[in-house]
Length: 371
View (spheres, rainbow, N blue to C red):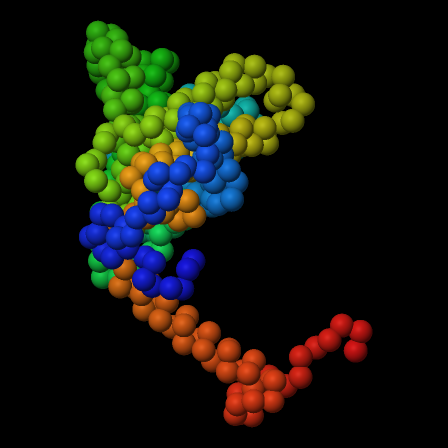
């Protein structure tokens, strides 16, 4: 991050003040390189430079941390309604399509034990799970904000009193949309029929649901991805687009990964005999990682397309995107502290050369190799 504050665009500004006429009139690359292939190459390069694999791994971890209390919250709510047996049967139907028999038996056994809790125990489980879910989901949103700030090459400059409430609202929206998307993916086929029978729904209603759930799922996923990519970074975007090229690519890769998982599940028996119960867990983890890698890649694509637009308008965006930020007060204070620290360190170095105040040499003699 640069420590020179004049290079950062002011909050609310929409354009870099200085143009680069030479870049506008004498492009350094032939026009043929301004192609989708060039944008794709730059997107992949930025993904590697920003350590996109590590960023996806951190998001996957927060997803797992939120999944466990989410399941506990669901089970506690079911326990309060007295429908634990039906819930365990439904979970067994869902997990049997994703995990091995040993893993499913282990999970359903623990769920049955938790389902035997009293009303007080179920209420405690609901409260504790809700708190843990709120913490983990908010951690996920904050981590996603750091990821998108890295991708768009901007520091986080929003003060806590402005940032935290916005992230809490976004956390609630993400939890609701993610739960809805998960329900739309899971409640299909035999699971939908089982749930329909439990709720007393007719076969016609279940048939309508089987058709309508896929457009609904597509809409929910598009809204969720757009919300994550555009509401988390400290960037003031222009007109909001429901489906950007980056969001489209992220969803496309996610669909391909989901199809791959489905194909794996279809031939799961062979892997179950060779790898065991761990295979299903590994596949789910890999699917989550690919999902978040696709989100990071989509954010990188949107950033590179924005870089191309800025360059075409003569903005010096080769090294750093020139995007208006929502707020820069915190980052300006941080840069000021950094400048003061650099001044102190510079004084120490000058004192080491025999100049300046000897009191600026508090660290003693440096260690030297071989001594």
